[in-house]
Length: 193
Image (cartoon, rainbow, N blue to C red; front, side, top):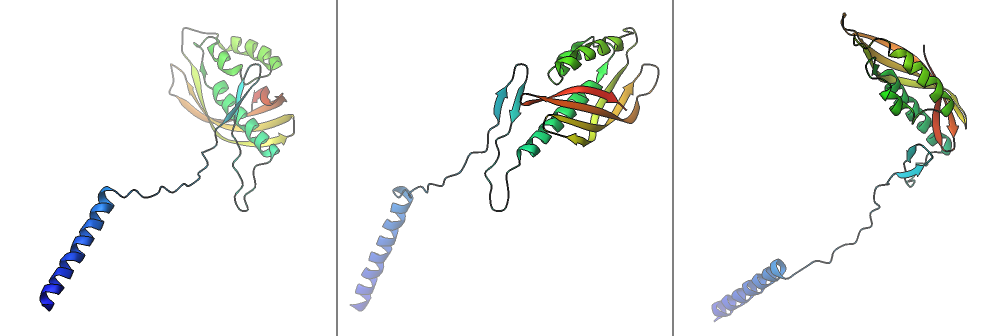
């Protein structure tokens, strides 16, 4: 009789385990854990009369990390304007008419736009023979960083393309002077060194 009782108990325990497994597989839905995650910061766009400047939202400080100061954000904004202007200003061909002026006008002050327009007209002398430059920024250094004025020396790698010669690569610096108008940085002067 002990064998019969032991066998029935074993069958009963096996049946209970099988029912628990079936319940867990088909009917049990664990409570979802609610974890709060902060979404990644989205850029905030501020619009001026001519330019849309994207300013990243600062991240919340964690531990010993401090958010960037207003001066650091302003210096980074002026640095980006200097880099973007340099690449567009230094890349052109003599057959592009004044189409690159449309790209540059968003980066420059109104006074410099007038001087730049005349300067770009002088570049397009010979439409028959193609020549042009491509420019990549290698590095930059800030000479002056004030609240409303900044000056950068931007080092570039330039490639000159002429029809009767191989492409010539060389490094060239450009001095970029910026002024702050409202919340946006504008190029007020640029001179190849």
